[in-house]
Image 1 (spheres, rainbow, N blue to C red):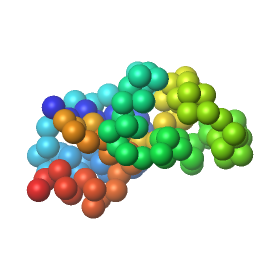
Image 2: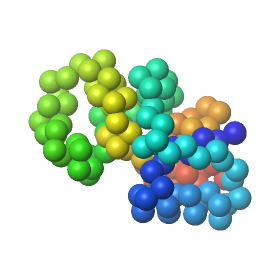
Image 3: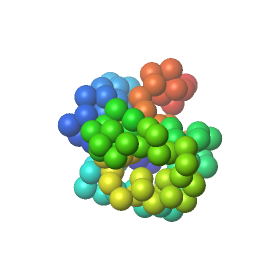
Length: 117
C-alpha cells in the first residue's frame, strides 16, 4: 500500500492527490499537520529516498522562514535537523509518497510517472 503524506490545504498536495486518483493508484492518506512524522520515520524516509536531509524541509513555508532556518540549517547536525522536523509537520516538504521500496519528496511529475510503469 502506498502512503500519501500531505497537507490537504496545500495546492501541490491537491495536484498530487488528483494525479494519484487520475492514475487509479490506491493510497492511504496521512495529514502531516495532524500526524507529525517521528524522528524514526524521517530517518527511514531519508535513507530510502537517497536525498540529503535538507530536501525534507519546506523552504517556502511560513514556519521555516520565521525560524530563520535558511541560515541555521548548515550549522545544525542531522540529529538536530531530524528533531526539529519532527516537532511540526508544517516544516516538512510535502507531499511525501511512501511506496514499498521508494520515498518521493515533493510532487515531481516525472518521478511519480515511474510508479505507473
